[in-house]
Image (cartoon, one colour):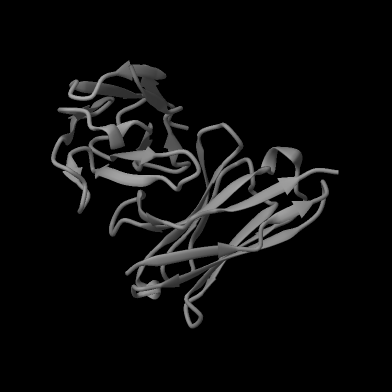
Amino acid sequence: DIQMTQSPSSLSASVGDRVTITCRASQGISSYLNWYQQKPGKAPKLLMYLTSSLQGGVPSRFSGSGSGTDFTLTISSLQPEDFATYYCQQSSSTPITFGQGTRLEIK
Amino acid sequence: EVQLLESGGGLVQPGGSLRLSCAASGFSFSGYAMSWVRQAPGKGLEWVSSIRSSGAPTYYADSVKGRFTISRDNSKNTLYLQMNSLRAEDTAVYYCARHISGDWGWDYWGQGTLVTVSS
């Protein structure tokens, strides 16, 4: 199974900050990496697919990069609605696996 | 508008069974692979099972293999998850989700249905 490790597990930041979340795969997954945002009591929402493709309706302040084993999600200027938990997910092979999540909190 | 509406969750005793349903609308259901993903209380996301658009093949996480069965009825635009031999560790919110075309990620999710396994 491919293990996905996110860092940090939690992060405090302020509105307007630039934030980067890292996701590392235990083996190469090419560009088969997706990112989700989840708010309390809500379903996950797809942000980025295939590493760097922005899902429709997602603000352009979100961007993704990486390849192979190391990936990043960057939020260029945090907005109040961005405080949530973020998950990476590999779609290279089954079993499909997620990172443990990064909780982004208001400083 | 794409909508996925899960139902069938509830409280069940260990060893019991439950069938979840997910009614899809707003898209051509028969053209998409579908999945179930779960989230235990206060925990992260866990992929459970997937099914191709035609109904086969199907795929399962090791944690549910042999106990859960995914299926679909394309004539009814509905996805199912039959859960047998339920355990306490199956307690979670279960989401149905539509696959991104050509990928094993999900672009639309239902609101989830809570399954609680407890005596």
